[in-house]
Image (cartoon, rainbow, N blue to C red; front, side, top):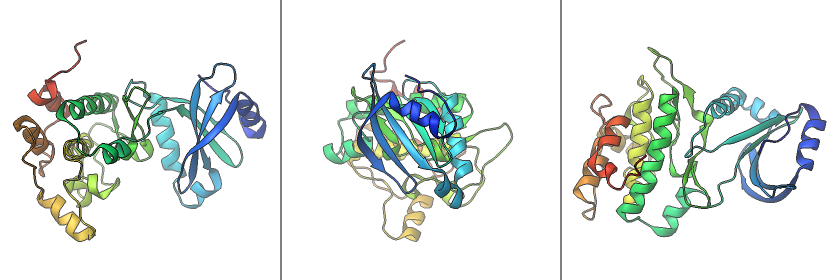
Length: 278
């Protein structure tokens, strides 16, 4: 369901005439997200509304536009779909797929730790989407349960591409970005990194959260948190199966050169169990 592209106020006015605005799904520092229903088809979309002046004033306009352009490149069952973008002199309207069941973060908070079969199903979908990103030279750099949305069938939709970037052969990144609890040791240490390995670390933290209901690295004191991450200091609960323990340990390997890769995760016996066959 694509909205009509247009510039200026008349473009968005024409566009929004086709939709009934329902409720506010979320409010951020620079944006709000509204649920809207297409008048003719009844199809629901999420409309993210960004104030152009505010994002320009805080210097994130380039980041926002890069995230939008990257989403335009991606089409995958486990990545949130971008339908259209309409700009006015004051706002940017981003029309996206509506994920009815909200954030994976809220699901984990509500249910606590998940059974391994359910956690594995979520993790397989996450890795499928991340593998697709990397294959298309996109590194996400902000993977966390708050950026993993669930549709009406509880299928994962990766979102939050504001910190993502395009990987180029031979080029390394140094930008320290993402949420500290999910950031790889090399990122918080300010070291150079290629890209995929930092997404793998974040996936390992997400897997731990799915299976344990808590984070492996957590401390209100930021220096203490960084010390734990850099040292790979965390506890593995006794309820974890040997396979799950092994995969967590391989993803949360402090040395990025020894850390398991996405292809390695896909071949891991714990990951392979119950994997849908194409």
